[in-house]
Length: 395
Ligand SMILES: *Cc1c(COP(=O)(O)O)cnc(C)c1O
Image 1 (cartoon, rainbow, N blue to C red):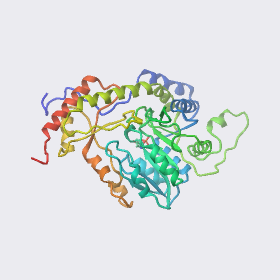
Image 2 (cartoon, rainbow, N blue to C red):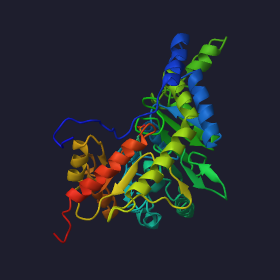
Image 3 (tube, rainbow, N blue to C red):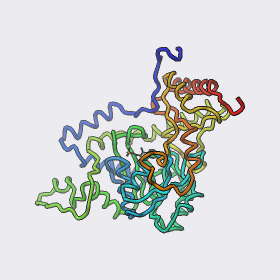
Image 4 (cartoon, rainbow, N blue to C red):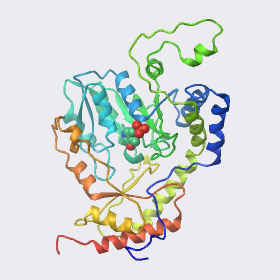
């Protein structure tokens, strides 16, 4: 195949693992005619809770709405500040602004792309109301260090676990799932770019019963009784609206799909960890190419596999070379502070590692049905692309 010629195959960046099981499950709510938040959502929540090991799990429309409710629950109000990373999908920082608060950005560690705990202290002022940490691309952030800092300042911790279903962190000698209450609230996404999908969807986990109750009111317009309770009652019930709420419901059609997806989590994580190990073998000897680091206390689900290009390589050219060979990639994770929507947000600290990661990294294809053959092809193509793209400092 020539570079300009016909693509013999196209390798996507990612692809959800969906099959006949999800098709069949989606029939249940449709046939029953109970299609929005009802029995399937309740079952999905229970099954999610038992998978990650949390007493409470509340399903919502997506992870962005989950983050919004989590920040409201821990008391983030207009004028407050929340310490977080800029190097994340923009929804992390946006959720802080939905509360009328200001994100204060902490730089990242270059090897894990996660919040650098050493810098958090510098962002804390008397207006700081919470820490919003992110398990970026499924790699657990250094929760132990972050929780210690939070405790010292009496601040709640919200975990943006959008990408981290199935990821694990070493507790007291045991591997524990992200979502088991470590911080105060963890928020998950079921967007198709994450490990499991319901089209769109989100989940909040916590050990605080009062917060779980709040989430349930807020997600349904602040209504005092849910549709399911009112429908199931043999007495007339008049609902009331004690507080401002939102429409952040997940539908029963989505939850029915989600219940099938949950069953696949162990296989999904196993396959991705195998493919990530394989990338390390295939790419480990390329001079100057840096592979993502997994700390000894973390087990990533490898939602994304992000490599740092050798010094002097031009990111866009490498990506184009791969695309010409039919291989889709993405550049490193965005930085919210560099977007026009954030032009008015003050930047008290420089974010050199965040910016470098965005500019020097590319995300390689990795998904459940990615074959070894396609992975070999991707690795060979990357090797060629880097060889063809030597703009090294010496030349
Ligand atoms: C995908 C993602 C979100 C947003 O999730 P949605 O379900 O699409 O709202 C938030 N934070 C991070 C880190 C993400 O990757």
